[in-house]
Amino acid sequence: MDIIVIEDLWKVYKNGIEALRGISLRVREGEVFSFLGPNGAGKTTTIKILSCILKPTKGKVTVAGYEVPKDCKKIREIVSVVPQEFQGFSDLTVRENIQYFAKLYKVNNVDDVIEELGLKEHQNKKFGELSGGLKRRVAIACGIIGNPKLIYLDEPTVGLDPKSRRSIWEIVKSLKDKGITVFLATHYLDEAEKLSDRVAVIYKGKIVKLSTPSELVDEFKKENLEEAYLELM
Ligand code: ATP
Image 1: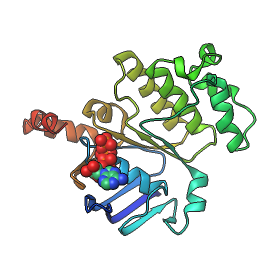
Image 2: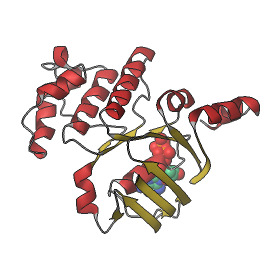
Image 3: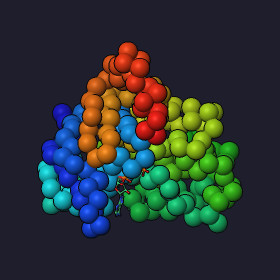
Image 4: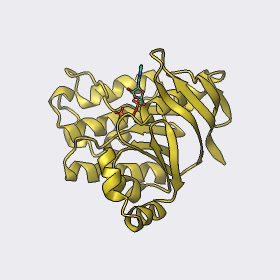
């Protein structure tokens, strides 16, 4: 089943910028789908529409069969967004931050998520004092505490050191193993290659390629596109 269906989606901001210019794609339930593209390509705009933060200018978008923006109340119950800049409460501990989100979803048990995200030994540290990698892990913990069917991760490893990146990759794999569909916005080709079942490449508001990661990497190599692609970053 396709959990996300996007057909000819356009988003034109008030200043006239065409952030999305007729994109179409389908995401299957249970897969990790990467949305790969350089800064300004339209990734965050797409996530904001899929999670009902923004309205489309034109086009059809459904999430789990529910229509955006008509059925947004239903959609918000089953999706979760981990934004690029997660704003945790700096003066609260890791545990208290997760408890705050747990309360919103009327969930009592935070221990399992803390364990799952490898945060047990960090749970009493203040959020504001954590490293970038740990902050991202807390952000994902807050994102999954409400048991979403579908999660949007917006550039989850940007600015992280290699070890922290790998730990986030392991977490993404575990989300998939739990049956959560992952929509991963990234500008790292290696990340898309390692984690995803399928990849869409977005550039200047248009989808320029839709394939499996191995096909994509082959193509970049064969046509010597890697350098060209990196130049876009
Ligand atoms: P990044 O990783 O830098 O956030 P992105 O691929 O997520 O890149 P978007 O943030 O979706 O890209 O931006 C797409 C285009 O829309 C860019 O040209 C951006 O400047 C523009 N844009 C984004 N938000 C707004 C806004 N609120 N008003 C006007 N233009 C915007």
